[in-house]
Amino acid sequence: MFELVLTISLLLIAVASLLYLYRLVKGPSTPDRVVALDAIGINLMGITAIISVILTSSSFVEIILLLGILAFIGTVAFSKFLEKGEIIENDRDR
Image (cartoon, rainbow, N blue to C red; front, side):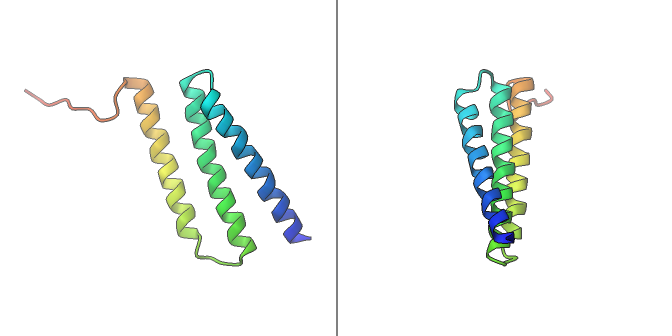
């Protein structure tokens, strides 16, 4: 029964990721695309966690942490780009 629940949840998260991918490509605005990209990262973390439980392995924990860090950095970079128009500022005191 537990494996059936894990398989169904894996399928539902995969479908949600496909819908987020559609929103990423077709999104009406750039903030919608940023939110979709962040949600895809969160879904990838969930998929990796479910696969880790199915395979009864704890070696995927590092991958989940790496995906979380990359999703956070990407979200911060896109937010900064939307706010200021550039990601890396080259302001030097003259």
